[in-house]
Image 1 (cartoon, rainbow, N blue to C red):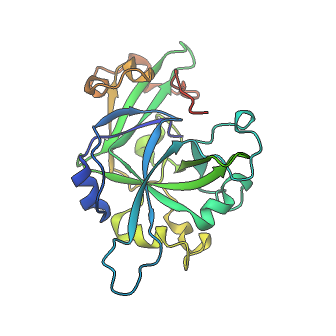
Image 2 (cartoon, rainbow, N blue to C red):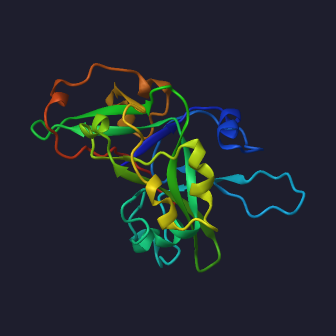
Length: 253
């Protein structure tokens, strides 16, 4: 699972990494939580002959995918993650997997390891070992209310964790490498089966894991110190149960 992540790079760095133009200014975000707006990248509509418009465009959407067929959003669970193994067949994700694949810029994500004996948890900041930007595989969807208002939303696709991550959690975000951006975003010629090989964990060693304090558990804590390294709690070498979910999630509905 991926229940929190961050985006620390500047708009200019995001533009360069994803071959975009015209991103509006935004501040570093250290503790992005479900239901908050997130930046996502999709393929742009086909260009007119002679146009120099970029092939990709950015959107600001809610983190928590809402399928177009939902009648009452308040009675539907928040879908922040989609399992890569079933995204192409599960009703909630089948249409966006075919028609609205996306990239989600991130500087890393947070995960929690829980000790079932004590009930305590240790938070980890999981970031690229080189400290750079990465692209999570994402799905987008648009939902329209009866009165005509529209909500754009997205989910992060996950895969089985690599051995260096699995001691904390058995799932991790799928990372799309730059050389695969175009293929992943091409929903006109690339069907889900054509991109299924991309739905896997990042190579072992791609991420480094930094133990951080419980400050990250609260949505209100959005300052750089949520990523300060701490001494891990002594139980983290043992076998865990399921990680404790972060608290204080907000709602845009």
